Length: 339
Image 1 (cartoon, one colour):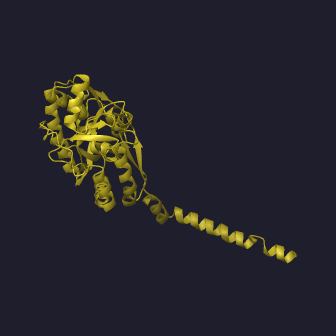
Image 2 (image 1 turned 30 degrees about the horizontal axis):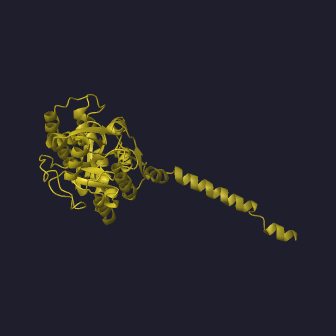
């Protein structure tokens, strides 16, 4: 009986000594030059800032890309929402972030290009504080009506406004002083309507009010609207751009409807703080290029209403400048004064 109990003891003194010795050797290995080199190879996580709330188009795109980028970069990519002021808060956070290549900002045209032209003190200068990393898609904005309106198309919407409210109406926009706000003003001028833009803190809360029939119409990006359009909960009635969208083949462009000059398409890109090493920019850009080439990612982004296409750092910078020139003319012609 005694011998059996001794055999069932977990470790003898010799066994414990062997385990302690193995632990010392493992610690020594970690402290050796080789072990330290292995530890240095472990990458810090990446922060991918998004200037709008969870649930919106930008957030959905960022989370899709982040999930795939972690495999290409060999480190977690954490989406960090900093909603408010049309993306200003996220842009300001990027400005003060370490320029080590591990804090980036996924943004579309509004925060990077348009907002600095319509706000006196945005808290950042895109050309001086940020460096383009890579672009990955372009998209178009659209006008959609809520399910509570009888309008099936754009002309129906105009006729409904004239017939029920004397041509007056409110239109939701994701942010104040944004391209959607200027589009609302242009639509009002073109069709002799008294349209009042109602700004929200991003597309998600705007969509919530549209789905609840609290507001009859809204202007946002096609990725914001596409799923609810497909389900019939709201209806996209017109889109910007030079051609109809593949995901919305029956929806006319504003050019077709007689409102020309809005053919230039907004863009999505990733930006880093100025001073970020070129090697880190190139590394992230290469990873992003691989990710958007994956069939699953390409199909999902296309289904969201994006025209997927890789832009290098230089190409994204040029795209940003060209877009700024277009909207600078529109903003100036509207008589809008920076606020």
